[in-house]
Image 1 (cartoon, rainbow, N blue to C red):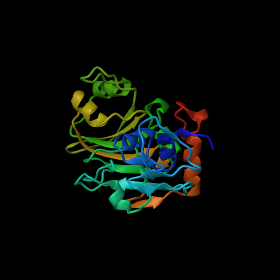
Image 2 (image 1 turned 90 degrees about the vertical axis):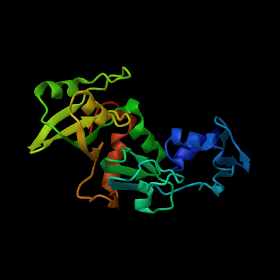
Image 3 (image 1 turned 180 degrees about the vertical axis):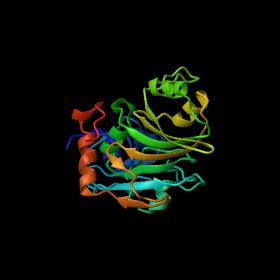
Image 4 (image 1 turned 135 degrees about the vertical axis):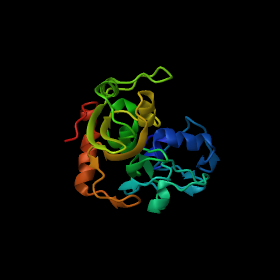
Length: 249
């Protein structure tokens, strides 16, 4: 096997996206043949000894795909030095897993946990524009103009204009309205910021779908392994031929 950048090897071995793997290297936590490496260094995964925090990565690993319903109060970012509990604490699997489709502390819903670095990268990289579906409670009743603005894209304080979104009213409650929102991007706290920007403060967020994968009947804090069929559909959905098509089969 030819040499390739170590961050690519780590991502393939389940240490998260390439960017997450780059952070491990930048922090001096990665060694090749006993030597701390730097970003851009290369290695041959078939013959070199590669370790993270002193633990050798396995040459080949079994792919893991888990659907998790993240409850409020848990971090999506896996940081062993952070005092708050993370999604990894809910699963308790020693295998390093990457959280696909991160949610802020107050939000809940579907997160895909996997060591398939290639799939994780394709589902999270913004250029692929994969769909994520949310049920969102706003603490008022939106008017037609507010919904139209959200659908066509909102200019944020920093000048960034959000991509067009699918927004529909699910039902009205005594103290607000439930919306169904489908996005093809995932800026940090985007739904909350957009809602605040157009006068629709967000009270609750629950993600119910990532691409072809649905939350289903999982309760907050529960998780399950994906079925072979679900993995197959996700692999098809994230294949290069389906880039930017929005196909969910």
